[in-house]
Structure formats: C-alpha cells, structure tokens
Image (cartoon, rainbow, N blue to C red; front, side, top):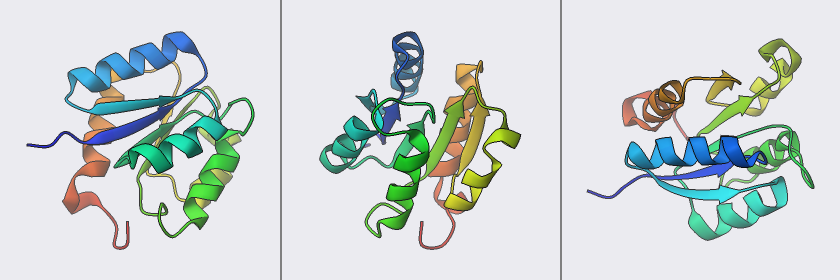
Length: 129
C-alpha cells in the first residue's frame, strides 16, 4: 500500500522535527519546507496529498502561501491543516481561503495525525478537493 505524502511547512526546527517524526511514525512520507518559498518549490516537486502549514513564516508567509495555493487550480484541492500559535479568532479570515483543519500550538501530535487522517479519508473530502 502506498504511503500518503505530506508537506510540512514550519520554520521552528524543534517543531518541524516533532511533526516529522510523528507523521512518519503514522506512515506518511514527509517533505519539509522552512518558509513559504521553499514550500512552493516542495509542492511542485513532491506533489503532496496534504499540507501542514504554519502561518508565521519567513520570506513568504503561510497566509500568502495559502492564498496562492488555493487560487491555483492544480493545488486548490490539496487539504491544508494550519498549525499555528495564532488563536483562531486572529486568523479566522483565512478559513475563507479554504483550510481543512486548524490546530493551535502547543498541541498534541496525535491530534495532528488524527486530523490529517480525517482530511485524507475519501468520505470526508469535499467535491472538487
């Protein structure tokens, strides 16, 4: 059975490691990016089935990355889970850009794995995504 591919976009090295280890242990192939520019390059190269995205990133913010991905027909259907230190109320407007999940830092890594499994399950995918 093929492993699902996830792109993790996070600039904090410790958080990046925690997410990577937990997703790999859950059976995902993980590609890492440390900023929005790297994330866009990784999106093209790795063609992930889902993205785990921090919003506070150098070079190109996660907000900008999200908008660009959602406006591109090739990528608009890729599920995106936002993992951020921002409170949901602070970033509520991004939900209109089409996020599939939101997790506040600090978080339990098993919550992220569960949410990723949920958004990737075929019966929970919206039409066109």
